[in-house]
Length: 322
Length: 303
Image (cartoon, rainbow over all chains, first blue to last red):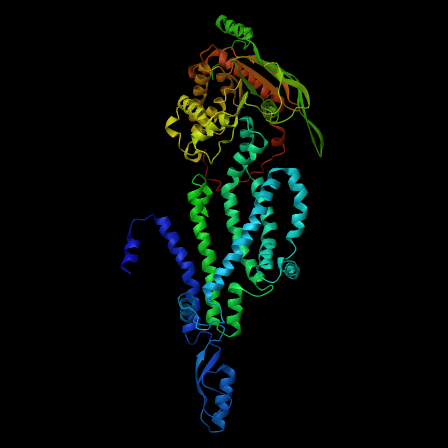
């Protein structure tokens, strides 16, 4: 607490401090809403958790019933002069409180599961990360050069553009069955879905970024004696590098979106399997923990990449703003 | 305003006449013969340039001036090899030009420095592209940065420099290739008046000390007279040479000459050529009719 107060009083750049405060606030605000819904009994809480079933036959301790049904039962029992059921307001099972999710998150990461049949969260996540890595790498190896070439050479762009534009509208999950038929049921089709989902957007976005490179730079290079291929390697590629980097950051986010679909294809694996499996057992705290982990991982990666971007491209002013 | 009668811009003092005589003795660097350029667009054919004829001799400083849309940028882009011409020919040292080449350096109006390279690497770019070793390129680059007074900024990035400094780097980057002719497309157009004046005299100093011929495009009449030996005046629709003026102001040019009779006579002639009374307002401007109503208190007058 003292350190925070000191930090607030320090003469750090006020604009930076304000930005940091708002950044923290943007996370605290939803957490506050969640906590209110979870801990304040008169906010929402549409259910009653039975603590004493009283004279009602079908109620059991720990059962969740709708409030109106509980009221009906109370009235009914009073009419019959039997013991009234008792209970406390509760939220539906699909909305665990923040502390439960935090506990699940902690246990998921630090305590290995007792039940070996259920994969641990870190193991599931690691599998997912590998899928993303290979999917995004394969997509980039094809997509980045294609994008740069279509952006640089008009005729190449016209040759590839329309087909890619068409293919972009084919939803990647639609290829699921086909991918399984061709690549088997394990990781092959999953990586293929991530590639299909990312690649075509990637080509178009990078082609567009390449086209936006200042023509004066290319013309200046030409008047300085730069010829065809060197124009590409010495001017176009370094010129678009910061924007390309930014595009890749956005596309990596898309790859995560396709991951969830991809992991449901063939044999379910990875974090998606963890999440669906936990949902099946109604361990919703684990479900939230899994979802939040994806968020933390994705956002964390992006923060790291943004930081690296500023180090890699000190000459690019726009990096500072992203 | 002084009302005294100006001499004709064609009157040259003996010294000036002798100087032009000496220039005419020098060999021709650039020869443009019956140059024409047509654009084909959806609206049909537009003739941007027609029958441009002129020669530039070694170490001559030629300015090209004309109203907007006269094709002066198209002309310099053709000379640089960035655009194709559709008729006539352009000879550099007697040989027709084919595409861009290091024998023609170009300085653009916009900031054309490579933002990802330091100032030094920007200047090294040309020599490296032309097969020089890195050491040689670096040595040349440092020499040229010293010449434009930016040796202290060798490791800075372009975005850290002011507009004038960036154009100095652009000049160094073009000159390090030792071009036969330096093509400048309104290079000081984006600079403030003070920096622009400084850059003009700096350019003159460079030109005096280095074997380079300059073709300089501008829309600023004062700039053209201050810098040029000869001024090529273009007219618009289509772009044609209207007149080639030999500037009668004796060299070396100084800022004090802006009020000299020769200077004012030349400027009056240029003004008459570029903004004739009949078409004082450019074509696209004529379509603009502001409809100004009083939006402030009628008693609240500023004049």
